[in-house]
Amino acid sequence: MEREILTEIKEVLATQRFILGPKLEQFEKAIATYCGVDYAIGVSSGTDALLVALMALEIGPGDAVLTSAYSFFGTAGSIARVGATPLFVDIDPGTYNLSAASLRSYLDHHCKPDADGELRDARGRKIRAIMPVHLFGLCAEMNEILTIAREHDLLVIEDAAQAIGAEYPLEAGPARAGTMGDIGCFSFYPSKNLGAAGDAGLVVCRDEATAKRLRIVREHGMEPRYYHHVIGGNFRLDELQAAILNVKLPHLDEWSEARREAADFYAKEFDRAGLTKMVTLPTEPYRETGLRNHHIYHQYVIRTERRDELQVHLSKREVGTAIYYPLGLHEQECFHYLGNKRGDFPETERAARETLALPIFPEISRDAQKYVVDSIAEFLEK
Ligand SMILES: *Cc1c(COP(=O)(O)O)cnc(C)c1O
Image (tube, rainbow, N blue to C red; front, side, top):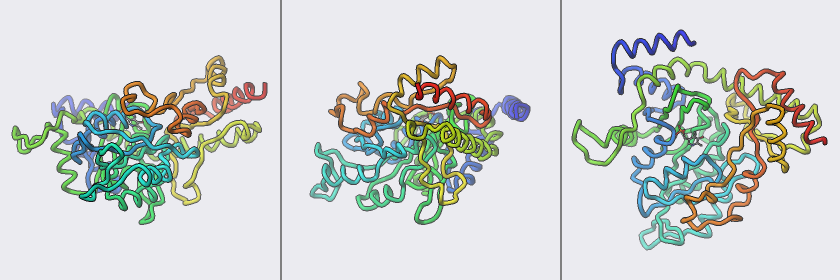
């Protein structure tokens, strides 16, 4: 693969087509086909994908977007950056994804249509969209979320940064992450399942007018050249990154398969070690659907009450773990102005205290995984 990548890079250097060239076009077409959508537009990062999506849908000051309290900062950060208000919703404790039940309860108890029929929160902000996050490689409960969105006439922007290729049993038929709402957002940050050699991202959609708007926003709101009807930015995906991603994309499903096999092996090992009462393993709600990519294990996240001590123990055993995420978004200092407080989203806060991501990547060896589980057993059985 390295040789293929170098050939691609040399070609870009030779042609000097560094911006919006043929490699990007090829990549956009390939991703659209892979995801099963009509339009894919490469952008500069996953965070910018979210930003471009919000800008293209004209979400801004006075608007509010409902999203998960438990996600990477970029999810809520992008909502705030367009001048809108992130309204947090608690998660499902099994999947760590936005809970449709909490979403419905929030809308029923804290939002009302105004005289014009526009849905508003208690402070008069117009509820425009829902931004579910498909965390750790597992799709959120989209059947329920889309039903709620339809009932309240809300847009749906999927943060699929961690879930490219993940499949979901949509009522209308199986669908991939990012293709179920109005716009889907992906990240090719190097550690994601499909990683570039730097920053890169992409948005997908089914609607032609939305695609056109996304493209315009990506390049300073320009259409035609040097005529600006809207304010956009420079959100382009580099040709060099697209060239590298073209080489990697055909391997994505094998890599996700290898991650899933590693996850299965962890489950077997935890069971063998007799730890399944002390450690909560990831849930696989869509496994029985028979969909291959029912989970793509961007992360393998376990839950245990003595998480912090366990992490210290594992680091002494040279097992690298990570905490995604140590705080709910509502507890981040920069969002204090929103007026949330500790206790508002109990499942998010519990997940932030109890979850630990274990090493997982396509090439991980079974011996390495055994060592991880044995090291956990050593700690928990003390
Ligand atoms: C990685 C990630 C992003 C941001 O992607 P970048 O490419 O790093 O900007 C957004 N949301 C989630 C859930 C992510 O995991």
